[in-house]
Structure formats: C-alpha cells, structure tokens
Amino acid sequence: MALTRPCVSLLYDVASPYSWLAFEVCDRYTKIWDADIKFNPFLLGGVMKATGNAPPGALPAKRVYMREDLARCAKHFNVPLNYIKDGKVLYTSLAAQRLLTAVSLDEPALLRPLSRALWLRIWSANTDIAQQESLAAACAAAGATPRDAAALLLRSTEPDVKERLRAVTQVAIDRGAFGAPTLIVTLPGGPPEGDLFFGCDRFDQLAAAIGQPWLGPDPLSNAASRPLSPGAEPHERQSRL
Ligand SMILES: N[C@@H](CCC(=O)N[C@@H](CS)C(=O)NCC(=O)O)C(=O)O
Image (cartoon, rainbow, N blue to C red; front, side, top):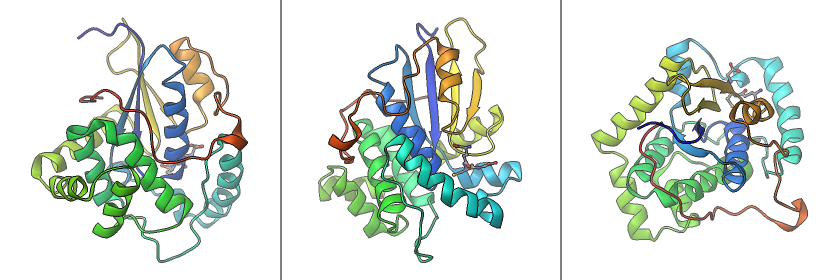
C-alpha cells in the first residue's frame, strides 16, 4: 500500500542502551511528528553475527568511553539509564526479544510498556532480563496480568514468533544494518528501501529527512516533573517494517 506520510521504523534490542534512548525519542515524537513511527524488536546479536561486527563493549577503550558517554546521554535524553555495574547481569536478550516479538503480534498495545520495563530492569536497575521469572516480572511491571504474562511467555517460544524475529532481523541486515538502534525512513513516493540511520544521535538529520521539526530529545516534558514508568498509551497493531 502506498505511503501517505513518512514512516520511521525503529529496530531495537533491549540489550542495547542506545536503543533505549532512540526508543524514548520515538515514543515522545509520536505525539509531535506527522509520521508513522513503528517499533520493531530485532536481534542485535544476529545483526552482529551476520555482519562480523562486535558490541562496542568488546573493545576496552570503547567500553571506557561508553560508560562516560551513556552517563551524559542519560541526562541529555532524560532517561534513567545506568551503566551495568554487576557482572552477573546477562546481556543475553534472545528470550526478551522473542517475548517482544510475540507481544508485537498478539498484544501490540503492550509493546512499548514492556520494552520500557525490560530496559528499566537491565539498563536502570541492573537486573536480569534472561530468566523466565525476570520476563514475567517485566510483564507485570508493564501492566500484564500473571495469566497474560504466562500466555505471552509460552507464545514467545512458538515457531512463527521465532521466525518473525529472524525475518525482521534479516530484513534489517539486508537493508544494511550493522548495529542498534537502526532507523529506516521511508517517504511517500520515495524508494521502498528508504534511508538508514544508525544511532540515537542522528535524530536532527532524520527529522530533516521527513520534513518534521526537531525539538531536542525530550520536547514535551519538564524533566524534573515526569518520572519514567513503563506505561504508555495503547497504539495500533504493527505488522511490518
Ligand atoms: N553513536 C551511536 C552508538 C550506538 C551504539 O554504539 N550501538 C551499539 C549497540 S548498544 C552498536 O550496535 N554498535 C555497533 C557499532 O558501533 O558498530 C549512538 O549514539 O546511538
């Protein structure tokens, strides 16, 4: 179907703190931009493997820089991000990304609150997101009943959910993704492959590309008066990139 307005597709993984920053910006700008903003969980590990890339933390100098950079970014973006201190926290996000994929298919209104709840666990409270109990706790924080959480966790292990996550990741790789966050911008009448942006630090250029205003990373809030909680308004089902 032909686009009637710009589309911004955010591809993210909750293992990635920079994805969290991009996610919050996209969430905030859904109320500002005349554009469709789509939230698509993908698997950063799969992207890294396919492209031969490695997480920035794998290089000691980058790891040191990242710690400083993320502390600055947390303030700049008004997101309560804390660098992971506890070596026991697992970065493995496969189960979490499968759960988010199941949610994107079956309970799309829960996608944003659950994504945020997972980031709050791993990148703010520095707690696990790999174990089933951790995922159930994130579902509860996002507002799911224990029964719904159990059903979604079960659903996340089904073949079509695994395949959907694999397929979304492959589309991103084919388009040129090498890390997260990846944003793909498509315009009415523009090429179907769109423009690819990497990182949470290109929103000024992205906004220019879609002809919409860039008002900084947190345009709506008085930073001091709005603590971040997982909740977000329901939104439309998202079925494609
Ligand atoms: N400058 C980017 C950095 C984003 C970044 O380092 N993302 C990591 C995952 S958290 C990644 O995928 N890096 C791949 C790379 O730098 O090649 C930003 O501010 O968002």
